[in-house]
Image (cartoon, rainbow, N blue to C red; front, side, top):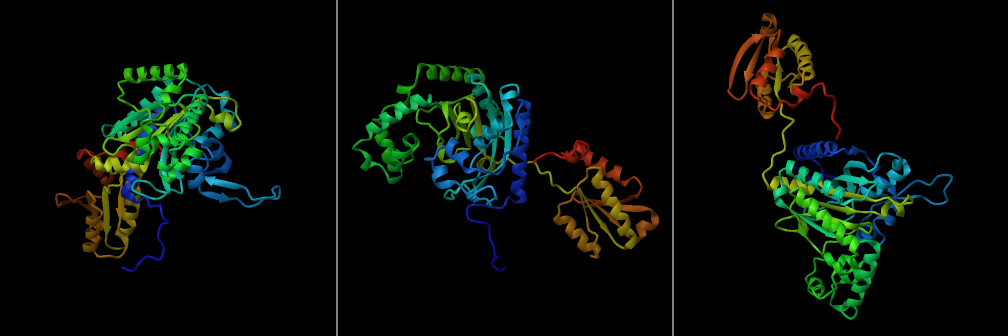
Length: 449
């Protein structure tokens, strides 16, 4: 085979039909649990004003400094410079911008929103990490209460349980206090590292200057050794933050949700306050986390709105798919070909066009071979499609008003009346106790992505 002339850009991948089955399965689980809990779906734009991410996520975070995909807009007559946009690296900042722009503070609070779609980060590609990736996102905006944090976490655990990977994960949780708490702790951390900078790896030396909290979840062994003698975050938490966290843990206990207190968990975005949490792989820990979230009570004010609390979560769908495959979870196969229609002769072809159309309208997954191939070739194609049944119509069957029905698994066939064949096929499919998704839902209308 010749080498392809073009390939996917580095850090991206085609979502081929097999993986698309998993994507659809995850979306269905998210939609079910989110709507069950009162969330409504929205889709923010794939690109936004770059400043939304700089203000919300933080100018000195890895995402903004190194990983934003910038997009230059065309200069308009009203502008002296081209507008600078960025592909969204996450959903929360854009959804909070939408909350402000569309006056959602006038709605009953809290406003519960969810989104599903691609995000983009110019990160170094590695296992389970791509430059274009997919997330599902849940946001609860407008009220602050530990019970809301607990309910959000509960919905997420239900989604992971539905996908049959919850037992592979541990919920890591922490409280990082208010902005004032963090300011005091950051200064103490900087003071602690005075004279120790040379013992830090290069990346962590930069973080000490730009974003010292990221030292707490550093993967570098030298940094972790030094941190054993560093001040603890909990020493700087206000009594209010401690009580908030204690109440949240009580609610998680009441809901039967297992968790691991993790005082080093800070998450990498500037907008977080109070509650932060992540779901880690039980064996590899943070290296293969499937998602995380937390409270962002100051974000909407940073974006120009009135002070408004919020809490959210984002899950990485490629990481989830990896876990599902590792756990042997098979996504339902909705693309099963139920019936393959083969024909010989012009009259048979005309009759089969109508037959194929009627079968599809009744919700039967049907493929028709309407070319000029021999019957033998058509049946080989039916085998490749792994069709459950084949319908064969030739010149003699047209004259007799019959059609040949073949059970492809049993290798048995019979000649039956052409009239009524559609209902006959539907009955046979039902007797096989198939997951006849389209047959049950044929009048439900199309589902969203």
